[in-house]
Length: 119
Length: 119
DNA sequence: TAACTCCTCAACCAAGTGGTTGATTAAATC
DNA sequence: GATTTAATCAACCACTTGGTTGAGGAGTTA
Image (cartoon, rainbow over all chains, first blue to last red; front, top):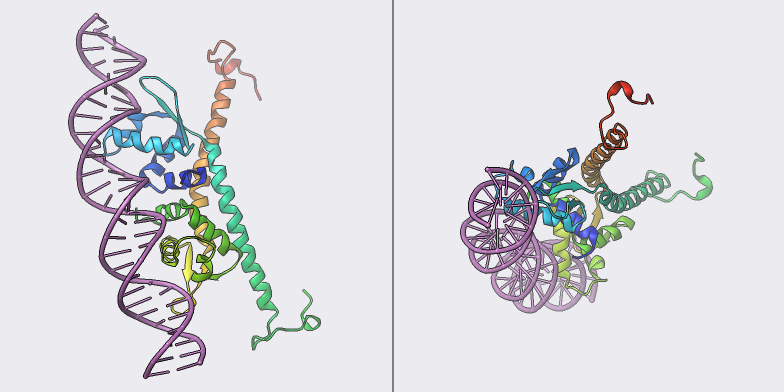
């Protein structure tokens, strides 16, 4: 499961991690600040951040006592491109199906080309 | 992890399942047809389909010997809405940051409002 | 009805995941 | 320099996951 798209989808499959992303969209924060609202331990949040980091969704300032975490918006493009591709493909397919249904008469028989209504 | 958004992201975190979605975007298929290209057992593919079904990404014709599987394109909206929201938010934040940087002089000091260039 | 085919269900297994606690590193402050 | 504070590392645990094989259910066809 090492390709980035898999990592990104897996990272966002967790409500806590989506919540963290939502918070980081507002502005950068330290690990402690991010952990504060949750009942779980700081270590658990640190683990979640590592998952987000591995997916490329988040980066941390390399070395400091209070490490600032911030969102990398570009990675979203990976997902949207994948999604849009198949969403569009599926929608087009249904349009073709509609078109095909238009070519059938009330009994479900194919109407010959020369007898079809010209739109 | 029972909310649909989590289920959808988790479902698409698997390359095999994304591959199945890609195939279904082209057109409906039976379970056997979907399983054919993979080295894994039919049961394994059936499990993958169950995950996709639970996420609402896919539906099966209720009961037939050769069950037709087809893609539900609407569910993609859930994801795109979530993604776009935070992507937009993050991008706007960077625009505000740029604006803020415009308000600083070369030494990094804040330029008082009445001394700023009027755009 | 019997046989065959397509698919699902059930039990099992190795590996991964989300959480815990305890110890440790490294920066900031006294 | 010693102490506090912020964050990570490491080991552990219960549960989930992606795969397997074997049996069973429900249409289809002989």
